[in-house]
Image 1 (cartoon, one colour):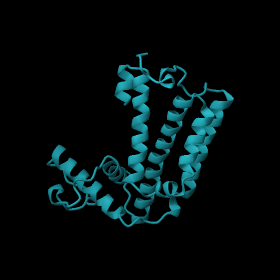
Image 2: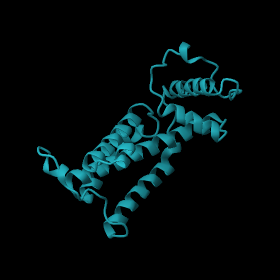
Image 3: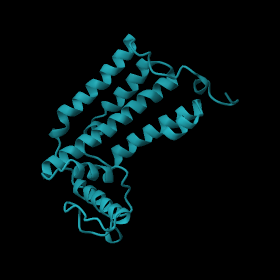
Image 4: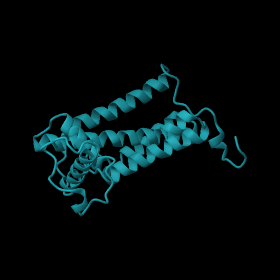
Length: 200
């Protein structure tokens, strides 16, 4: 460990509780419950004012990708008939929007309500990944799985964040991916290797 690092970054006990132990079961149960809450609630949220625009951005981006990769292939009829260059919002990121539209196409979803409910579920699953990253960051920082779970709970119990975890594919997804990236960065710093670098 290099000089000048904070003591908590030098710890090697940065792993989750041992598989099969009571703490491990408690953490698994905690995240299973969070997943269950999401599955029970994702249909309870309506369409946010900017969701159609976000879906449009993803659809135009998928259209552009398909036209670039396979220019002779017929485009799915569900994609917007708009060129990326003429889209006013083409500068928005599509790391979530394009895959969400791709899932919509792969599953053959055509009903508008079903499409937006699927987007809400996908948004929540990304949020759940961010919650897990916050848990891992806190475990690494405090070397205590209970404090990790407490930190994750604070994030989940924030009413505005939790509500928007179902329909805000910009801010909440960015927050979750930022937490995931920070967690993988610490994983690489603490254990430099090709695997941790690729994961990050």
